Amino acid sequence: MASPGNRSFRATLIAGGLMMAGGVALALYGHSLPVYTVSFEQATSAWTEWCNASGPDRAAGARYHALFGWHYALINAGSSIAAAGLTVALLAILMRQTTASGEPWLRTPERSLTFVAIGGGAMLLLWSGMIHGLTSDLDRRYFPACADSIAIPIFGIASFMTILMPILAAIGFVFTRSFGELPVRLDRWDRERPLRSWIVTFVFGAAMIGGLAIASLSIFGADLTTPSSVVILYLLAATRAAMLAPPRTSEENW
Image (cartoon, rainbow, N blue to C red):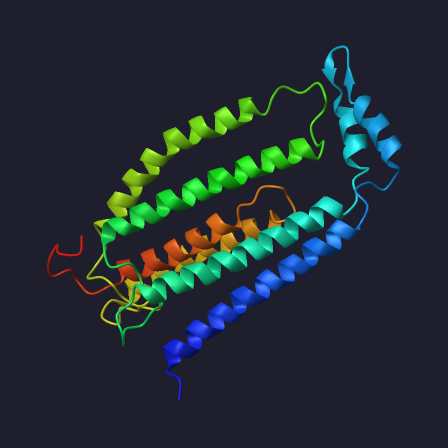
């Protein structure tokens, strides 16, 4: 008979596989639909009218964007769902492979500083997903012909991330000082401190629900941010569990 850990691992892989299959099917269906609700010639004419002597015309741009059908939106949604499923599966496999035999695989990292590294990786995934969105929108003519190069927003995003990541790393380091003995299961509950358990669970649960809602609302856009969203959701769940872990007895797993 399979152990609960094996069953949960298989269920996670199946869920990830179903997300990948469903996402690919949705993207293929979107690919079968026309790009515009009018002829390509009419859409091209509207695209060229977007620019005038003074630059992009907002009203003309809004009229042009209204001509897009569900082609790209469903491709974006399918790609986002498939990428999320792949991330779920890969994350589960990585956690399972790094867990000792007999130990629960759905758990926190062993070292506190790994949390900071995971957060940095999530930010890099987010940045790459946003760059993917910009380049995709450029190829799909979501920008006017007279628009500046996407190098400007790419540079802006890179500069913002360069400033943001050290700040987030410092915040993450502060959080790790409140961690207990690691690793612990993700469903950790401190029965000796029930009020702390409720407060920490409420705060991080609200953050996870909010993050999931934002990720769900953004899947129709070109930004491929669902992989980073999956990693961030795991990081939030792991941080909650780590803050409820038994008191640290040594700095060995720091």
